[in-house]
Image (cartoon, rainbow, N blue to C red; front, side, top):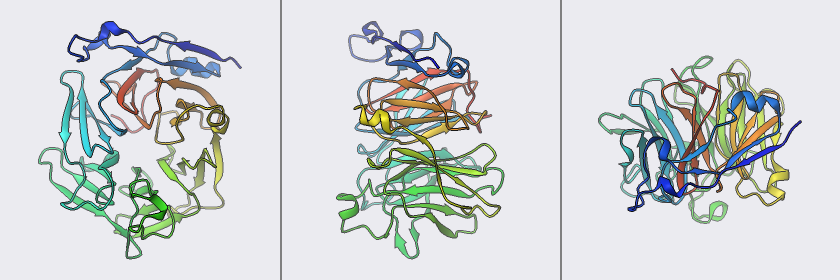
Length: 344
């Protein structure tokens, strides 16, 4: 097993005098790539660089999603209560502010995780309204998808994934308390646990797991037989895997799929958060110090660093092989040989 670190120095020449980032090859490069396995060389070219696409604009950038029909990325600035758009042609543009849905938000900030639904609408977890909502990208009309379980409001839905094969349209999502002032001690907290939930197309909500202190990123394996959940609890810096039965219920006990504790204990900033899957079933998962590339067997193959904490990532681009990374205050990307699962 090899451990190669390639560190790139930010290219100041990529900035105009005004501070606006240039396009194309002029983007500054940051961070680098660590390679722990030869498989990483197949997934990330040896000459791949991490490009910084924006300035330090955001309070905490999150939830990127590629919009194939428009050829752009949408992502959230959670504390800024703003949804942003980035494209090669237009650069960075404010897309929706406030991103929280409702005149009187009871949570802190705006949207977090974003995905495209089967009907072409954007689905967003919303800290401000403590809901998941759907939005038509043409009309910008928004409607609440789900807001409560067992008659009680959610804490602050954080991340979500939609089944496309086994239970088309079914949503799986996490509900930690990060969007509540005081979190678990908030007077607004109604749920007894910080749960992992399923929303069926009938509208029924099921609590799948209430044992994780801080469930965060969530995703389905390519065959949709395994549900992955990132634990961002400082005492449990792991990615958990759950086998799903024919009804979408958890079968058996969860297992630790991958563990990034040693990097956290070494002082690397951040915790396990959002992730994306490629067509081979590898997880590209954010955690302490960067984006970890994890094989379907749970082997950590390498890590992509941006020089800051990272929150989430998503594949996109014309070929679906560009990984967009929400890196705390800015948006970054790296070109890979892997294609994002679920993209055209």
